[in-house]
Image 1 (cartoon, rainbow, N blue to C red):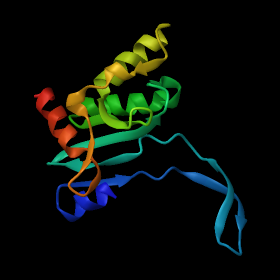
Image 2 (cartoon, rainbow, N blue to C red):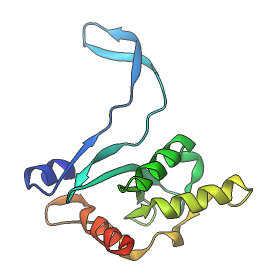
Image 3 (spheres, one colour):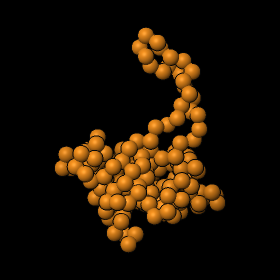
Image 4 (cartoon, rainbow, N blue to C red):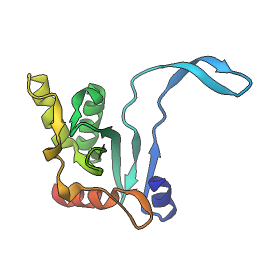
Length: 158
């Protein structure tokens, strides 16, 4: 819903990336897929542009006081890192249900924890890694008003 509002107000153009599936069984009467499998690995959940800057992000949620890295796939980290290297913005939007908060997590922070985990370090991103300056609030009629956090991220990247 937030992306629809951003689009209508001319603030950003962001679309959900469909996950490619192959249907196996259909309920022809209801016209719904009842069994399917994923064709290939998807990249991220959302892709678009804001303020003329390409942007991609994945949405995650946790109830554990930390974000388990098993919820993030290697191909997603690689895609976001390459996207960042090409001058785009790449990040996670993480909903911490146990704290009733949402944060933007920059790809640099994600990659740091990811690499440490690959070397035998902790296998999750602790709640303390989510910075207040990247807090995402529900306000001004936006269910998840993440552009303020994006603007802060842009300012930090310089």
